[in-house]
Length: 125
Image (cartoon, rainbow, N blue to C red):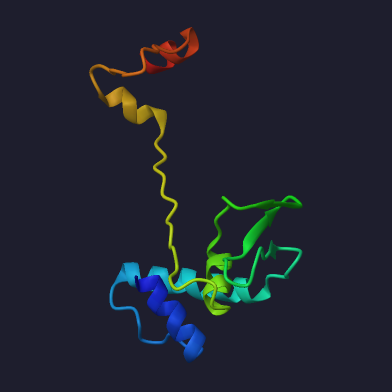
């Protein structure tokens, strides 16, 4: 909902100063500001296509239309051009850990049934 509020403010006023009240909202504002600018630079026929006047734009990936592809700049462009009433904001989060973290545990248990190859077993012992 917050991303949609940001998009509505960008569309009507062009500025989003003072909208963020927490560190996470500051991050969303920064991401949305960048995505909005990118979305306005997308080129019809090159970056996206339109199936009809009432449907959201479809992203072009590697020269092909991909209806399942998602991009925040395209979400912003759809909102700007009145093809969507809300912004779908997705965060891509991942956790990366070094293997030596696992050495701190007395035993490792996996649910997949895999115990790893000889090199992996040697590294973990």
